[in-house]
Length: 121
Image 1 (cartoon, rainbow, N blue to C red):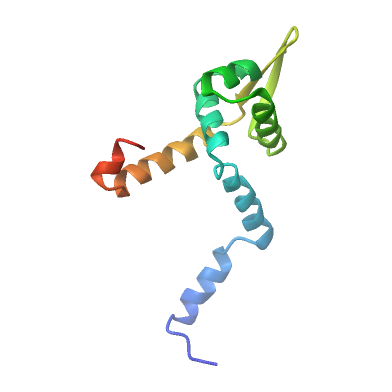
Image 2: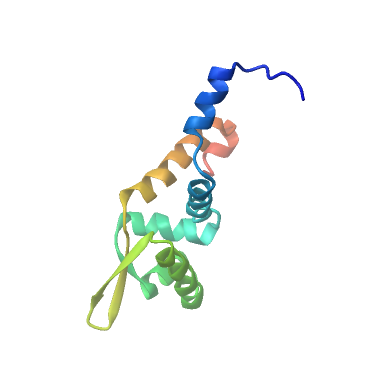
């Protein structure tokens, strides 16, 4: 086995602060929420206001089946919750951290994208 370049104290520090596999798995599941364009559009819209399925479908130009499927994934992940008003169910982002992560990603991309792509972002 090769001699490590990093000092043992630095290696120990890394081992101490490295998240557990379970925590890393949970983080991967969380970040997977942001891995689909349709979900990203829906998270963007729901970051502005709560919406029902038909409004999300109309505003984003999606069919209601797609919207319902994606909302189920977001709900199962704990990212959105619901509020019933008569027969209408409204969806909303559960925690502002969801919108914050998205905004952080957008800011990052604005910093690294070439000028001709920034307008598209």
